[in-house]
Image (cartoon, rainbow, N blue to C red; front, side, top):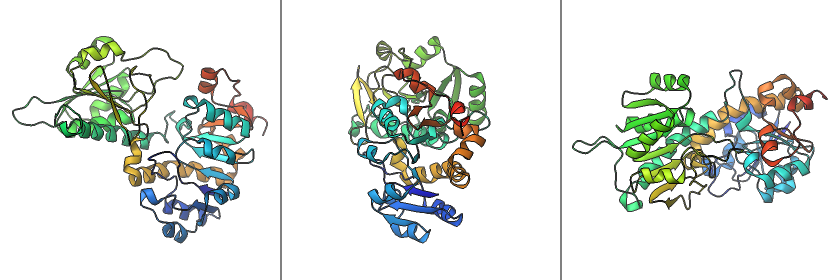
Length: 372
């Protein structure tokens, strides 16, 4: 199979789907790899490193034309729509339920698209979300450290256990991978950390992994309100179903919070779990609502591009290799977890959540492979 590694077009997106080491693995197994010129430069990988690994460096048009599969990090942008074709495969983070125009473009093109975020493993977990979720959680806390500084518009709180000063409070909603990542750093800095979740199993796992300055609370209205009143930094790590119209933290709830405290929305679901949150960028990362700082950058891991690219590639490469070695149809047929990530196939929408949100006809991935 011919694999194309593209340079991301999203603003401030410095990650790349394949490292030079991954290219070496692919070419060693007989696959051809085209890498767009300077695709890895933002992650510290040069064209020469990719060439030494066996890749062909080419311009964008050539990579898209030659490749059977497009190996990417972010969703498809309008300038990339023209490259989507029926005989092509795109493997990336897609988030189709957040991008209707893109979803329609994928359907109209007939391209086969597989979303990292929807692939599951044998335990029903999301292995291609995990590495970026952990980084996003940690990066979100680090962003909070930055924007809490008075010189950066914050209240001037140092999120650390300083002798003679009241210990700052960090509240984290969600004990998943991003929540644990945020809690790990927040706790190691000596803060008083509260982590809330509706899963007692998740809370028990968090308690076992985290130090004693972390309190694990069941997520209910009373506990949430109590935390909002005393927290200095609220970190949201809950993915909110796009079909929901309610919120976990409403605008009125912000009046419970201390003026000048901050909300770090790692999940970045526009007006989702946090009603007042909408996605921001690394160029313009914060805004204020009800005297509360909001930070909701939707690609936090890009700030740590080399680490992020390497960990993401480590997770995605086995699935890519399966597609390349077996062919798309056999890979989808034999791996139900990979099949779960199928988003579009020859003009059919195969992701149920997106179909429900936009009232588009849904075709089950199982029905698709039944015709193989």
